[in-house]
Amino acid sequence: MTPAFLKSLETLSKDSQWRVRMATIELVGDISICVSKDTYFAKLHDIFIQFMTNSAAAVRDMGIQKVPLLMQKFGYQFAKEYLMKEAEKVYN
Image 1 (cartoon, rainbow, N blue to C red):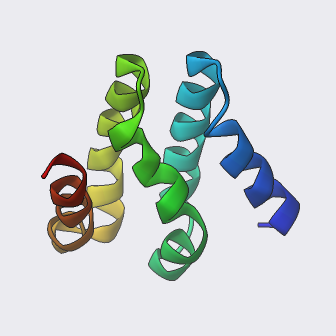
Image 2 (cartoon, rainbow, N blue to C red):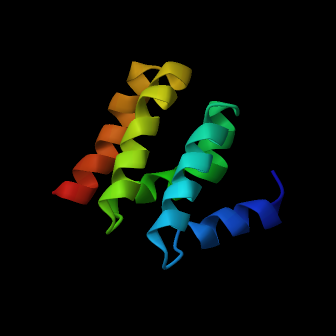
């Protein structure tokens, strides 16, 4: 993944149009299951986790739909250690 591509994903994940943000979270989720855990954390985790605080319910729903795929790829422990901790930070 090139730095320009990652910068584009970051920019699109903050777009004013909720449909653009939703498509970006969907894409990041799909890309995440194709890369290693190290690559996911180094380059995609911060972009993906933004879905939790998105103002649009459709964007939050899209992120939630991608969580099971990430759990299949990285395991239950990944969800417990990383996704749940992020959720606790956001919602506490």
